[in-house]
Image (cartoon, rainbow, N blue to C red; front, side, top):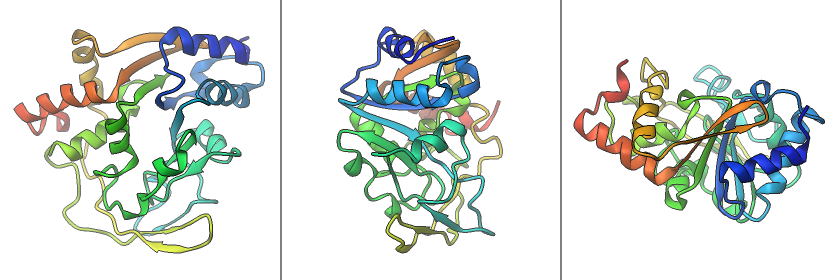
Length: 248
């Protein structure tokens, strides 16, 4: 059974920069037994990253659709794990106003980081929070999950013109802000038939180039990388073959 302090020590051993920007994708189940369970896991992450910025996904792509096109920033639940739902409700955490690919952020300049998401008309476009991760050269930490859960790669597909990833036509979507304002946020959506299922192809290359390191958080295996190095590597592959991530 791990304690919160055990997890904090592991974050240091992994090489996380507490005063930097950290994007986390996590499987609560993979972490194993923790005193205080999910709350202790979030306490560890938030305490460790208090001098910097902690970002988790608060996506709603599975429960906001053409048939149900409204995302309420206060009430629409996340679709990417129990910890993301717990995190977005915590005091001091701010949720962005993207209808399908919002993020939740805590710490230094969180308000600035989440601002403007309602102006983005693609899942991870330029100016979006995922693009800001690249601008900041954020650390991306996968805890108990592999590259198929790394949404940042969707951003690379958009920015570096991968074939067949975004719809050609917009659909009508809306966001209700935390203050109750209804905003029109039309969207091009992801449309790759393989989704993120091919992203694991990138892991051996990342290991070979030395941009991916492994560690442990609780019982979970961790994968740590920097946003700029991951984009540089992936962009080279897409330049050679724009369909690279669209096939197994």
